Length: 171
Image 1: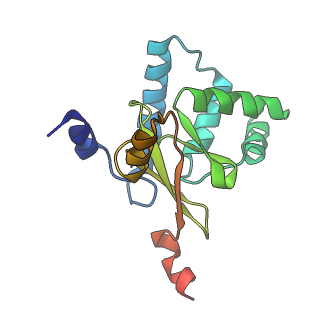
Image 2: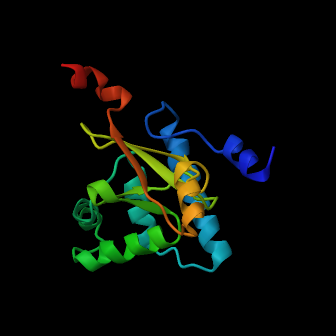
């Protein structure tokens, strides 16, 4: 098994639609974020931590203004730059991801490891599940290599219906 295949085999399955201990999910992800920031010499300010906590409350994408509303409720200010600066930091450091289709953000479910995420987005409730993606392998990677293109960033988003909404989708 090559190292790429080993990484793919050990990659976690999607999280977001599966039943799990959400309290442990939140605390483990916050701890991983704190560790990553400490090891990288990054300032994990109270506002940045609070924005990550807000994103972790649900496995759902949130827009910047929804995050700003929650920050305001918790006394962190009401100016858009407060939310946008925190989100920029979290995304730049792999602690959150931007869901392009929704122009919204979600917490990274595996902030301990650099990875290329793929998202499954429920079209009915905006729930988001994240899993690892390996775009350099497969058809996209083959096409890039054939043309001499070097992939630096990909966004993989699949739209569908989550397990909780399947009955509503069929109605």
